[in-house]
Image 1 (cartoon, helix red, strand yellow):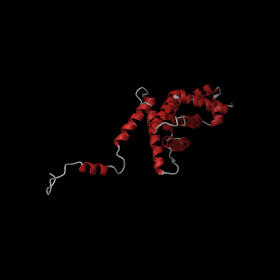
Image 2: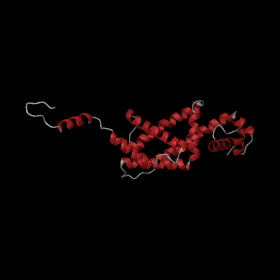
Image 3: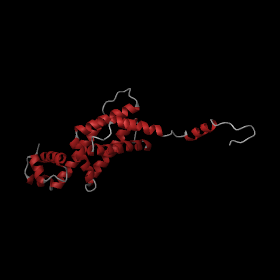
Image 4: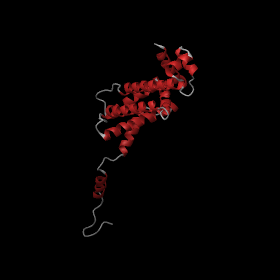
Length: 216
């Protein structure tokens, strides 16, 4: 690799090991095996180099999530079994790439003041919505607003789970916990159009009033 590539690799390593705010130019130069002057020559500033490294971290994390979400699931699996199996792969990815998970949160935190990072994150989020709608439900989020909303739901679930797992992995939910929770939630939601039918059915089950009289 040339100095530019070495600096990017070193900056990315520092992001994973020390975080954005705690990384200095000397840290990057030491990790890359280059001089401090090389940072100015290739990137003009340490901030610009770190921002470039953030973009690479975005790409790396996005690729890892795509692999986790695309993991093989048995063809005969029920929708709930598929749901549980996919999240199991995602959690395994969290554990394997903990430093990447941590750096990813810093990437999100930096999005407010680094437009290039924000744009790349937005693109990645949209791609994630499309992929999750397809993986979990077999829906095309590019052609249907409701399918897009389903993808957004799963994207929100992923973001929240990532935060829980990073802050308190011992008490973060497992894939089985998620499946149990989904089963409980689904059981409490009445299918559309059944509410009135249930009430009418209940009324029919009541005791008939006496002939010529009224129900008390």
